[in-house]
Image (cartoon, rainbow, N blue to C red; front, top):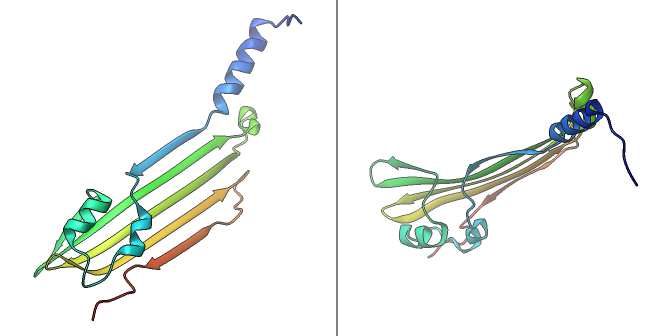
Amino acid sequence: MVLNLSARQVCSWSVAVALTAACTQTVGERFNHTYVDRIVIGKTTIREALTNLGQPFQKTITPPKGETWVYVFKTATVTPTIASIFNVYAANTSRSSKQLTITFTEGVVSGCSLVTSDSPTAGYLSSSGGTNVMTTCGNRTTQ
């Protein structure tokens, strides 16, 4: 089969393909969020957290003898739709976010929470919902 396309048709199709390419933006680094289940308040140490999670996205010193570490991994993907070619803004987007916050006092975990969120959106300024979950880690405390 031979296609006889004009230069204008080839250009139009090339633009259409380029406009429908997805774009993804990322903030932070992936981290082992499943480790949260093994964190024990009053027992898990900074060294154990560092070994299992790596360096945090952010560290804050909290006087007198504390630190707060924040691990973040967020992605947003935008995929334009064919309507974009006709100057009508329409795109499918999805966002995913994981943020783990661990507070240490004297080198041992004193608090911890994990917040996850997934928000798919489809079409022209419409939302198809999403999920947000907050987990307080370290519910098991040592006696």
